[in-house]
Length: 261
Image (cartoon, rainbow, N blue to C red; front, side, top):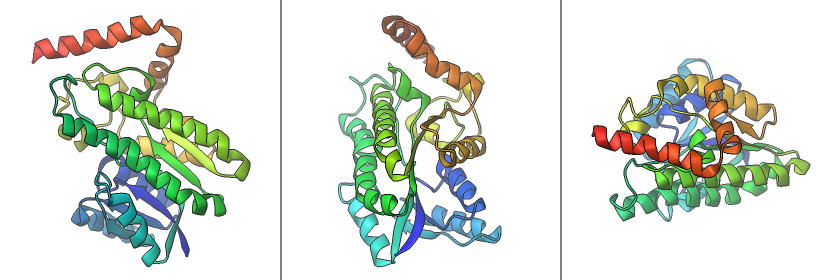
């Protein structure tokens, strides 16, 4: 079996930036997402830079059988993840009571169930190769989020799960890191229904900067990577302020956005 770096949600945004970053450091990649044309275009662009062309496997990890089909396709191709980058994710802006229930459960399925399933399936190979796992979480994982309640909660799970695995697997020489960016201008925001001016501009970082910080922190053995000083300060606030005060501040921001329409 050929050891590879598997990147989920690689068709655009942070996932595509991470693919370019890992490729630039000589990693052999497997790119997966739902959209095969975008994946192949990215693979061609990486090859045009003189790197090995990534393997492409289209898969919908939000579906119950998605992870199993992806793993089976990799095994059939003789590929085994030595590094797993769990980037695929989704969010939705709005009051939990008013948003579609199925859509909110789909966020949990993709952000948590699929991430956990794929991680557990890949762990034997990752451990054998003394590789690593990079989970893309969010600054949102450090605080409750009225207006994006399920998304924030799902990313809190990713942070906690990653930190625990970091501690469990370090004795085996396996790196486990959570990349926790703030706002990143990608199509994620449009799909989640987030207006361009909803999130503080001071926290925003381009996908390429996030990918560089994530790769450097992961290779350096860091447990948590938060790109940008303002975002690092934001992750400290829930530890310094009373939780009720932090929640009230987040709620005020959401109510203000609702009134603005």
